[in-house]
Image 1 (cartoon, one colour):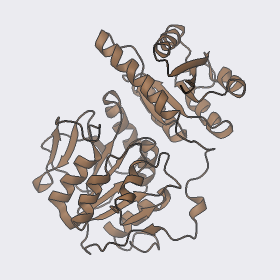
Image 2: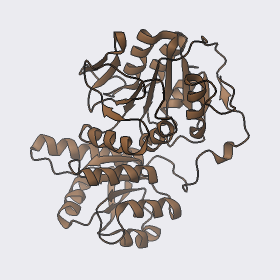
Image 3: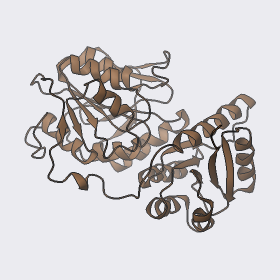
Image 4: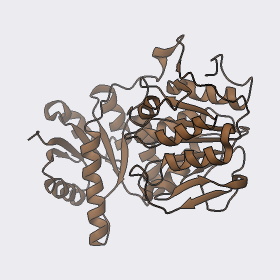
Length: 358
């Protein structure tokens, strides 16, 4: 039997801290090796405790959870799962910024009032801690600097030389900062609608969309069933619902079964774009655990669309893009800092970098 995952809890509320201890004690695959009430205590203890993963509160006395995350990822790189209040706008904003600083995921605090709700939240916390403990992390550095002057790898399948009419982009673990980097580099005058799938707890999706809207030039909203996707706007799939592109660029929100264990699923979005946009679709698959999106990107590829997967060198988790690369679904495989330039070159000829289109 393998050793249990070593967890450090960072939580200033004694009640929540003890509740998290109790939750961990119910899972034999997890062991709480430290429970501290501040960022200072966490930074002081991490060398001696050597946790496999950290459960991080955001609202801490003294050094807050955001700064604590930054320092840990700079000095003692360790997988971090943020445990956040899903209902407070300011907490959500800080939580999203913690993801940009290097945290791997955000889950809801165990404050559900019903027994079923509590069990679901507790189960999700344990699952995220177990999974994220396996993710290799490194000291944070500017993404893509190791690629300067290099040529990106690309799949060899030919593409139709048609201008794209819609951009579909998806991510999972490590996705929020990656999406912010890519979409944030597109101008307010970007001529395509942007459809986004991000795997995240349903309670956080409104907050995620609001956060993303604050860090990118284009307006960002949670997609609504029946609305028309307009150029220069970003539409985020709602929590626990699939997002599809329908005829006439009308968006469809579906509660059909999960695909690849996910709802919303990237494959559902990509397949709808393949059906509706054909060779004028543009699909981008970024960092994430699992294989969601790969089959959908393959459908887009087969329809003649331009397809992009993030390169292993910059992906926080090289699962979803790796699956697409194995299927030869990606026409271009690019480090994160070159994705937006490639997208611009395709959507706005003359606006991109000197990268040659794949």
